[in-house]
Amino acid sequence: MNLEMTFATHTFANPFMNASGVHCITVQEMHELANSDAGAMITKSCTIPERAGNPEPRYYDVALGSINSMGLPNLGFAYYLDYALQYEKENPTAAPLFFSIAGMSVAENLEMLEMIEKSDFRGITELNLSCPNVPGKPQLAYDFDATFETLKQAFAIFTKPLGVKLPPYFDFAHFDAMADILNQFPLTYVNAINSVGNGLYIDPQSDTVVIKPKDGFGGIGGEYIKPTALANVRAFYTRLKPEIQIIGTGGICNGQDAFEHLLCGASMLQIGTQLHKEGPEIFTRIIKELAEIMEVKGYQSISEFQGKLRTIS
Ligand code: RRO
Image (cartoon, rainbow, N blue to C red; front, side, top):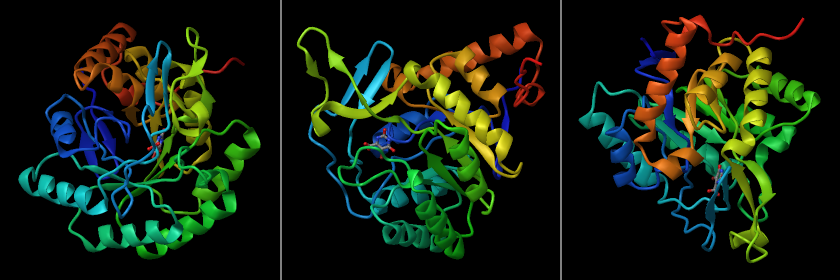
């Protein structure tokens, strides 16, 4: 059974990786991912200065998923770039690293892109346009004109592989409009989706919210969001030019979820909520489960079914 996935500049041993934010804030966590069976890994979205993020509790696991309002806590751009450069030096043949940035302004994003461009970093950069949890900062990718302007300025200065992390969209008009924008740029990939912004979870015993920031509002992940994630993966797979690959993120808990994301057209697969619940051993389990499903269905490689979702005629 072959789970290899050719993505951007590399053929990864398997399509699985962490979703940015989960198990990737510290170097220690990145080491644990590197030592797991994950095919790739991504750093926590960063800003130039270190950020403490929102007050705790700010992440809560529930039966069907999670709610978070972390508020972009991170150790600062230099910490992650230093880690990435050191990792590449010590592991010259390893799979490329993914490096996530989420500046608080266009200028901050451009400054980070410029520093990555000038550095020796050989990996893949992800521009997070969809952080739902910074009070007073709307998600950039819900502002279509601002997204276009940001990408225009980004590609004027950046030549290395670059992808964007998008929030979920819920209307065909929005899929069409965003795809039209994305198709105008030499993007390496689109990552769909970030958490479903500003949900509310209530503890039935205490009648209270479960996270402190924003009076309990936060991004929803896990099983709750799989249908929305699959729809976004499919919508972009069928609208984007073929050079732009898709990373599927949202509700991947087991091999069947992974299979469905691939069927919708995803290439790499990111796991957030379930990685937070289970730890990096999840990658061993989910690789086995995906391989078993492929075996039963008679597939030897992912390319035999990737994107080949059937509709009803
Ligand atoms: O740190 C966060 O609150 C956060 C980010 Br940057 C993001 O992109 N998605 C999310 O659910 N939380």
